[in-house]
Image 1 (tube, one colour):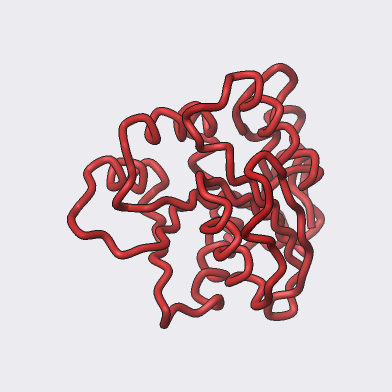
Image 2: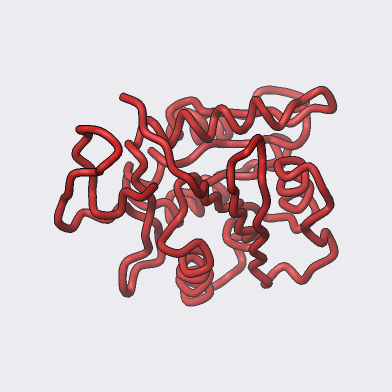
Length: 206
């Protein structure tokens, strides 16, 4: 069933400032993010991609395994706050040659229940030397949504994946509930969206 939003909100989660920045700049088609920014700084940049308003939140430290639970909670909530009322899509920026069990556990901790994974895709920034079983498990958890960023890659292809995620979730976005350190969908009262006959959460927006 078709659903669309006028302002697409995307959170980039990763471990490397430079890799996250490269992905954000690739999506926007310009040098919008500073690849030398401090890792604990969450950046927000707006732009237009194919006549679509896009908001990118760059959170390069959220998948780092050495940050405390308090930092994790604060950063997750800041990412949601900057993408108010919440992101439609989460992009896990991963290096296939450096994906460990600790990374897998951190992803589970950040995304929480299946609701978080329903809005998430994996983007790898380098070619893998060999199959990484941990990476494959994370991709499967994200409903096999995976984009390999190559020199020949087109932002249009990645945007289509974003659109597919939005449609699959009927335009709903993620939130970070009070006291929680992970993303979830808003399961409060449901309302009927004006765009069509789809019944969505109140977090459905256009």
